[in-house]
Amino acid sequence: MAGQLILLPNLLSERSDPKEQLPENLGKIFDTLDGLIVEDAKSARRFIVRFSKDLLKLPMETLNEHTEDLKVLLPPMKNGEKWGLLSEAGLTCIADPGAKLVDLARLQNIDVRAIPGPSSIFMGLMLSGFSGQSFTFNGYLPRRRPLLDQRLEVLVRNAQKERTTQIFIEAPYRNNQLFATLMELLPRTTKLCVACDLTDPNEWVETRTVQEWKKRQSPDLHKRPTLFLFC
Image 1 (tube, rainbow, N blue to C red):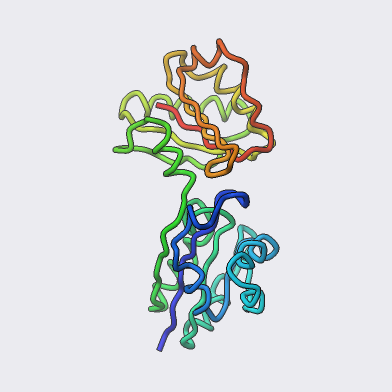
Image 2: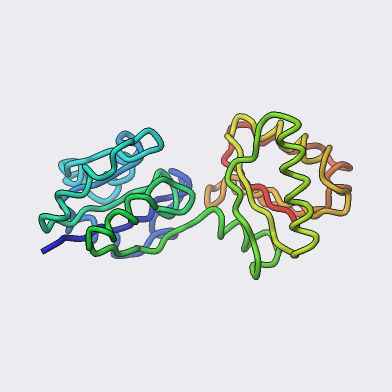
């Protein structure tokens, strides 16, 4: 009989309180696992030790953007074991490589269960004040111009024509450059939300038109996990 693949939530910030952000029974779920599939073993260990030091004894496999053969992760579950899939931050499979493993698991008739938890995409959308009826998460935008210019032009057109909230991220060390580019390229009446350090004690969320942003000092977003949204 095939085992299970449990999709586990993680904190968005290591300084967040697990009691506020995660299901109360998550520790008990960890106790039932035979092993863990993680993006980064070091950060995964820092997370699971919050629940029990005994969890450090769990077998651990790595799944990230460099993993080529995902099928080698499935045999334990095919043999009846229960393994957990843990994202680096937030909800597993939402903007992370775990989705491919879930697809393969279903093809192998492995039972897949999801445990709820925080998502920066959904939390940012909730806090922005923008419509959640229609939105698109675009991941990372092109870094080089004119590709970035062209991509933003398409997103602005979609936002205006379809009233679709556009959501995207950038590597934290490039946040300030992206914000400056948005100030240059977005129409002045466009509403831009910057959601920074979500669930962290330093959480900061601000929604203003581009015209209003330009009248203020630019925020310092360097190396701070940040979500950008506009409509």
